[in-house]
Image (cartoon, rainbow, N blue to C red; front, side, top):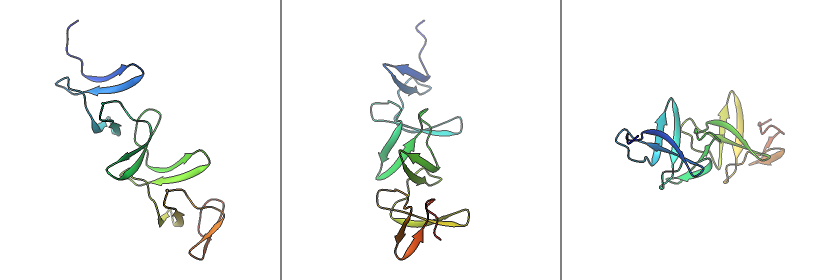
Length: 123
């Protein structure tokens, strides 16, 4: 109808977001309380995305995940900012966990002399 398109647009199997001036958005976008990442070509990212040196996980609907995420058989922990934790011990709900340099939760092993169980909890 000749009207300028704004908002979400699906094109060739990818989702894009057009700003109020009709320009295609790129980078981080906050929409209805969730964060989305739009690649340099404007396409909405899903799955793992490395942004400014940190890894993020975007759900199938594009929304940024936080907290525990299982990918295949491996668990990862994403901070409130969405950034994946890596190479560190951290505490969640009074339990300690360790993730390696790839962000994978250590399970059924010993890390730095500390034993973690099948749930990755320090015991």
